[in-house]
Length: 270
Image (cartoon, rainbow, N blue to C red; front, top):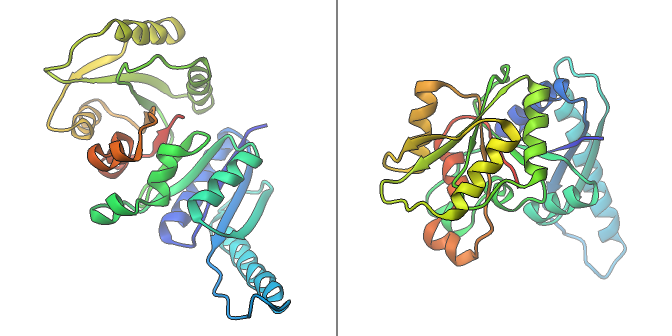
């Protein structure tokens, strides 16, 4: 059974993602999990039992608030929702919950944080887009649900799609009755490698189509945006790669850059 996880922090962005998830789930009928991670303002002494009482009291308050948050934003959605409230590191708790509950996809809001704050601290959304244990769908703060007709899958030919990724893309396209379009941004100094043909052939064999190759324009996100403005598109899909922290610090993350620049839902297909 498919299981979707929606982390919420009661912000407008997470409210929007929650509404979007409810509408999206009409095409999947997945089990929905809503997770809230809170910070504990401990005032009791750790040496006394009162600290446990205080924690449970705070957790109950946030549990009630989460249920009210769901009620305020569920619209005409009438399926069961499972709520879990805990404390800890926000990114770590989302990852742990996704792993232990066998989550199929994480759906969360994108507040669009940028600048030095992103470089030194990152955001929960950008970290999950790069490192989550399952596909992660980022919803821009002002994005409202509309039927999905065109899914743009960005590929850099660095490696062929796995069978699991191909099956996931096919399932998404079938459930949403959407078209898949594979897009490759080609830099004018790019050198074609033998591995590129393997990646292209995998797409050809599985989906019966060749990637559309477009020229590099300033940046990769800008190149993708130009193509979408000209040809259309409702979702963007990226295939994140695992890099060291130093790579991310010096070079950044293309997936994070796309999530900030392109104002469409972005699916990181891990």
